[in-house]
Every structure is written in C-alpha cells, then in structure tokens.
Length: 435
Image 1 (tube, rainbow, N blue to C red):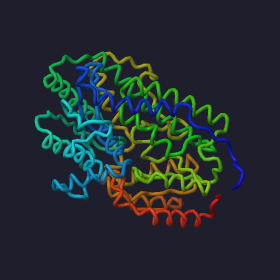
Image 2: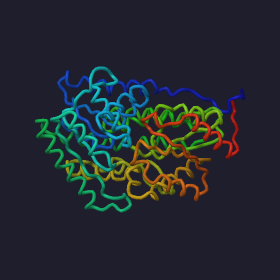
Image 3: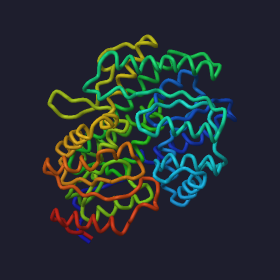
Image 4: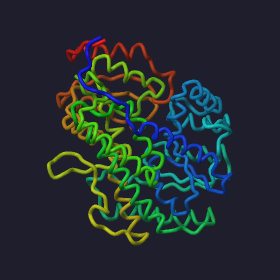
C-alpha cells in the first residue's frame, strides 16, 4: 500500500444530508394524516408554485424516487417485473417502469403502500414526462393532472414570447390548482419559493465550481447524495440552508487541501445517470488514483449556470443579487420561467452539439484527463445523441471510454465487462493500479 498523497475527511454535513432526505419521504407519506396535501411530479417540474398553496403541501418527485428504489436492486427488479407483467415494454425509461411497479405492487420503500397524491403537477421536455403520469392516472384513477410544455427551444435563442409561452401556462396552472385543491393561492409564499429556487440552484453550481481545485474536494459518488436536494426540494428554504452550509464546508476543504480521493492523480467526469445499483465502479476508479469530479448531469440537472466575465462557467447571478425586487405574481412567473429555461440539461434536447460544447467546457475548466460515457438504455432523453458527443469530445482531444448499462435496471449492466473496460481505459492513459 502506497502512502496517501492528500489528507481526506468525511463531510461534516453528511449526516444532515441523510436526515433531510429521510424527512422528505416520511413527510410525504404522513402528509394526509397531518391534514396536508400531497402532489406528484417530475424533478424538473416548477415546484415553487405549489408552495403557494400553503406550508402543509408535500411532493414526491418521480426520478429521484425511481433512483432510490434502483439502489435496492431486488426491489427495483420486482417493480419492473410488475410493470412488464402489466404490459409495459422493457425499453421504456427504467425510472418510469419502477414508479409504475411501485404503484402496482402497492409498495413504498419508507413503509406502507404507495401514497396516492392529490394532484399531479408536471412539465414536459423529455419524451416520457407527460406520458409517465398519464399512466399513473390510469393506475390510480381520479387524480387530476396538469402538465406544462417547456419545449421553447435552446436558451441561446430565447426571446420574450418564448418566456411568456411558459409563464402563461404557469399562470393558468395556478388557477387550476386553486380549483382542484379548493385553496386560495398565496403570492407571497410563491415569490419566496421562487427566490429559494434561484438561490439553491445557483448555490449548487457554485459548489460544483469548487471541484476545479486540485485535489478535488468532492467525488461524484458523494455528489449524488448531495445534488439530490435540487431534485427533491429546490424551492424549499431547507435546500438553501443546506447548500449554504455545504458550500462553506467545501470552500474550507479547498483551503485546507482536503481531497475526496487521497491519491488523486487522474481527473475524470462521467455522463448521465449512473447505474445506481453499481456505484462501486467509482470506488474501483480510486484504485488508479482516479476521481470523477462530476458531470454535466450532476452539475446541470438542477444547477443553473452562466458565462462569467472571465469566460468561464459559473453560478448564475440570482435576481436578488441583481437588486431585483420581485413584487407581483406576473413578475415572479416570468423570472421563474426564464431561470428554468436556462437549465443546462434542457439544452441538449434540441441538438447534441450543445451538449458536446458544455462537456468540452467542463473537461477544460475542471482540468480533466479523460471522460466516461454511460450508454444508458434507461434514459432516452439524457442519452440522446451520446454517440455524437463521444465523437465531438474525441475531436477536442479528450480520451473517452464508453460503457453500456441502465440507470435503474441492473439486468442490463455487465459489471465484469465494465471493470475490464475501466482497466483498459486507465492503462491506455498510462495509469496503473496503486493498490
């Protein structure tokens, strides 16, 4: 065993992250018993809006729910087999099949049966989003559903009428929410939630920029447990407070030279969702002194970014930092629509070149030695154009390794072959195992 190059230590806020996540799923389960409201929707939905209905409104975001079950390989297969038995094909989104299977089996991983939502509040950019919840309303009848079309084009082509297109749908959605819940919408609560979302998503981007440091203070496997609050409760003050604490701790780690991987000598990034049942591949990389510092997925699924004056990528300046005082519902809706339309992971639904450009930027600014691309059969949306991304990254001079798998379906992941590909990739770049 060789001596360690950099000091390491566990994140001090790690325990709080686990507590927050557990609290989120238990609150959803217990909401009805407490007289509250439950709603379901995707991780990308405009979740600041239902906060306008009150403080006792709890959501279950679909993709993180599917990922949580995916980590439990046995339960995930049970859910997917239930969906397949019901006639849903295996080549659909694995998160979606797991979610449907959870309903069909009436199993909730945090105890009891599937907690039926009072309404569905969804948006649509991925090919599966609206259809996902149409099936939920088939399996659990009498759930009212509202879906917002956000396919307004890439952000570099944004215009006033495109922002208005989304904002007007959200305004109609507020009226719909008032009708289905019989509650009056509170604009002040909504405006506060919009501010929270801008803060939390900008803070997460700032945290990711700190991983430019050598050694990297965070590794991607750990980041999966941290970015998730942007997918669960990004408009909640608790997310802002947690990311503020995390940002300060990561800054301190950088200042003290604390490493995520004690023998860091190779810096990588991955792409799209990982095979959740096989996260140990990231620990295997550490045998080579390799750290995955993140990915467009971990950085930009919920982090909101902008080009800074020095030409680098950085956290987007919030409306509050610009001195904007959000006073009205209409103003908040327009700011909120514009903020979300700039989301990095929405851009490459329009053309793979946009993703290649963002990945190339990360590879350069985060000083990467190589890139791992997951040909993820479980997500059509984020894997669309990935072969073109590989060619583009190779053209830019970065070594690229590909491996096939599925984020949620462990039946489609070949662990032995993937580890062999990692060995070949690392050796081709001149790295040998340290232990």
